Length: 392
Ligand code: CMC
Image 1 (cartoon, helix red, strand yellow):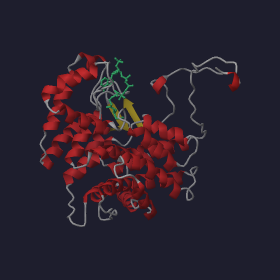
Image 2 (image 1 turned 180 degrees about the vertical axis):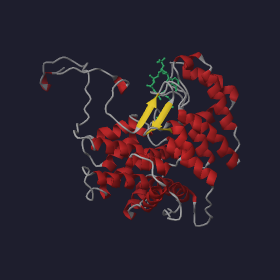
Image 3 (image 1 turned 90 degrees about the vertical axis):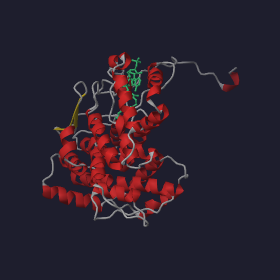
Image 4 (image 1 turned 120 degrees about the horizontal axis):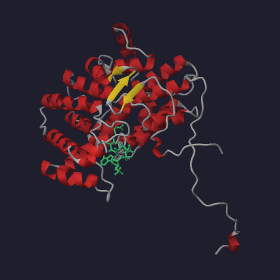
């Protein structure tokens, strides 16, 4: 019934129009609402990027200040939600917890907005993005058995995340400008990336007019796997497994071999057939952070050596496989003492602005159509039904 094209993995299917993010995969270019990512990373902040995505333009100084105040004031979560954390198994992966608690936001926020009202959609976006760092920090704290820390209005949005993660009643929390800037930049780099698996999932779930917070939980699920957001965790585990430069050829050989499913984590991208511009920013940042935290940079040197060897290898050259953003993020997170299991949670926190603004964009369209891909049926032709007593 009707003509359609079979496109596994949607490599060549455009599913929507968007004014948010532009990628030129051949040139390695990324723009948020027309602004190059390198410029934003250098001169802007995550909060500015959130404003840019929600309202369509960069804020004035006054708008920025009031927006950040609103965001910080919305970082608190309903106290009842804290009960959820107590119910999870102690060894739960924090992404499992995030799927649950973010989905549970839909049980707390469902009556006081109308998804058809543009102002209410802005309100939903602010609520979601502001609460994500708190939900993530609580996942980390409760897993360790540490008391949770409430957000505090004397800190900025990014500082609050560090504060909720790392302060205890027994230590003095110090804001380190280099660390805050590094984290803020990583947040910006991950804010949106057009129709990737998790964003498409949010749009698909949202196209049924489901509660937006539940749609974000669906996005978190899609992000979790190692081919998508889980890559940052997988890269660090892989680098540790490789261990030293002498082992690089062995692992490259494994990645090239089709006998097993091993892939070089943090390499390759569906859209970039050139260097991922975010990876360039990340590589530079690695040096600054490692210098500041006085961490040994053995793992960074190993990563650079692995990258250089792979980029000279015909297998990677022919397939245009370059490092992506997550090749370097894990190294920075580790230097910031963020545990490996939290890496993908960090990605979810950072991408929440992209997800919710894509949802807003979809909801603002005049005609809303439910997402409904087709399939090519390759099963049995019609068969004769045999009653159970007659079957062999
Ligand atoms: N290592 C080894 N071979 C690879 C890799 C890799 N990382 N990535 C792709 N290939 C090969 C693949 O086996 C295939 O080879 P052949 O043509 O001989 O069959 C060819 O390159 C094309 O790959 P593909 O599977 O068609 O590419 P895709 O667009 O479907 O997949 C990807 C994109 C990102 C899932 C994939 O490159 C990959 O698995 N990379 C490692 C995981 C990773 O770093 N993911 C993070 C992506 S960036 C952050 C984000 O957006 O989430």
